[in-house]
Length: 258
Length: 334
Image (cartoon, rainbow over all chains, first blue to last red; front, side, top):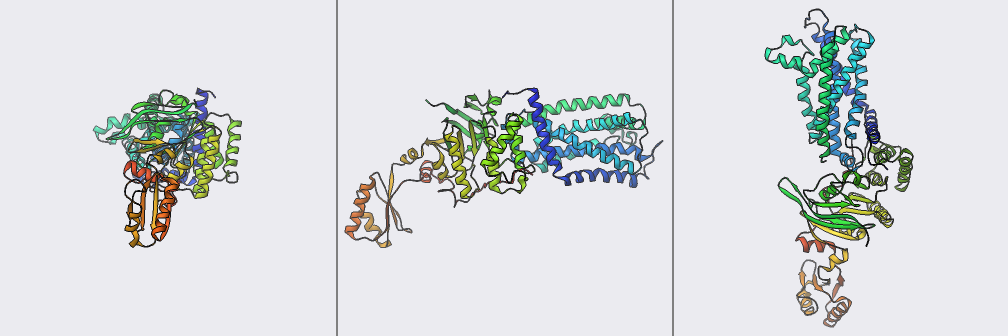
């Protein structure tokens, strides 16, 4: 049998993705739980805060739905880290590392499986968003592009979470460690409220961090306003994050001890 | 000369402050079983991890099947199978799915890994359970599946880390028989164990490890011989006769007999064999000292350990009575 080749690496990755997808499918309660939080957030923003927040030229629900969609994929990312930490704890990572499978396969397969799960979550959230009154104002092409951008963003961050999962001693630590980046990204951003309403010292960060840039692009794509430079910035962030965290995660995996 | 499938040359490994492994040297020939014997924390698992490319050594070299564990790590992984201390099988997959995936990851083609999966399921009596989730399996079944997974690719070298921990005696014996079959067909096995009986039963060579160092190696017989021979044991029926019995034994063996008053037992190291037994029996008969028991006892590996390390290893005979701290946690993957 040939030692290694790109085809074999892809095959290994597909095997890992299959393993993870089977596991996801067989724990349906996890999918439900993962969907509940963004759903609750959506209802909170729409029905509780919606009346209180006045936005010039728009409904708050339109403003906030992209945020909820992004939050859904970030939650998916957190599951990546918890899942990897669980694998570490159970000893199965030892077996993986002693097999001739490609070194990147475990990580690439997992993030791929999580991407599939995110697509399903996103579809659910979009349906929910439509139910509570969100409306698309652009052509289907732009809408798909907006959703694809969210998926891409989620995929990039699943690599961040993969690194967190591998670096954590156990799933509980992984969960806690994952919350901080999530919070900073979600709340120090334009996702929930306009940046202009924030203290000046925060605005620079809040305006330019990857989530804000992505939310701005998605809003533009869904609303029908020009998305231009937001789009490229978002993609550049995602590409950079993937490259950096793929390297970090792979390094952590190579040295992982159960 | 038979090929050396496992060679460890002065391997050392540090973990923080502790020297987990120091200057380990050992080797195993093709088609043999090498047992690493030692208590918890001795470094057995660490050494196995080094030999299966999970950890690099700090110093020294090691080769498995001719491949260097660091320089040829990738190639090495195709020719080894590892079954760790805890059954590393995926609970949320079926037995069949587990095995097929392992076959795929060994880079077998689909027809091949399908076929071998059926073979393994058959051999380990898991055919009926093949399509059930591993979550529903008993501990013994998980362990069998785990070991079966190491065999999908038929690797020439197998590493089994405490493979029979927590198994019932019948499953354990079954596994022993299976390992012997494999070895008979040419597989080289390195197994770690705390059970003397297991090492004695299976191993062609035993390496005794404690606190990261090899303290003895050889066959079971050689290790026992190091103790200087057998022990003559006399159990008197009446504790009052102990002194008289001790006097009767004078000059028979090596030195003075050890007395265990509670068990009414006298132990005398000896090389005399059966002739000595008969001579002792005659003396006791002439002096009319009633005995409960009289016999020659060969040293157990527990004795070997005691004399080598000054402490008993956990687990005496087949391990059925021993209380283990790290029992086989077959909880697997959630």
